[in-house]
Image (cartoon, rainbow, N blue to C red; front, side, top):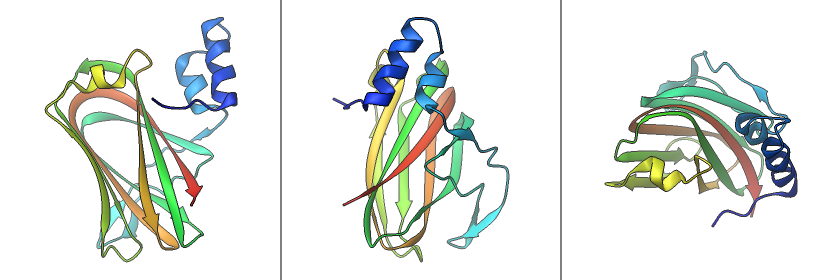
Length: 158
């Protein structure tokens, strides 16, 4: 279902051997961004600009607003969520990735399902969203589930 990169595959193997935990394997050398700012975007505020070499942690229920920057006209953004503490599965998860200028958005939405079951044994959900236009893309992530999570983004060229 989700192809694993070689580095993530090795990290997972090391985690299984007890050298690193699942969260260390998931973040794969990225630095944590505390994401505690107020960056203006789309007539609102995002907590931070999240780069592909960083990760952010938080809790649901609720929402998180981040900025993902692209430097090409046509890109895709891969968003990965690892549930590190699962309390209640909830039934809704929504991601909106807005174009620069916030005139349009790409949406991924899961509703009326057990989100922890959907995440599987590894506790990971992955989404790939179109990101047309160079610049700052507001990423809104909302869920009614109750969990602690770690999130990463990757910007992929089309």
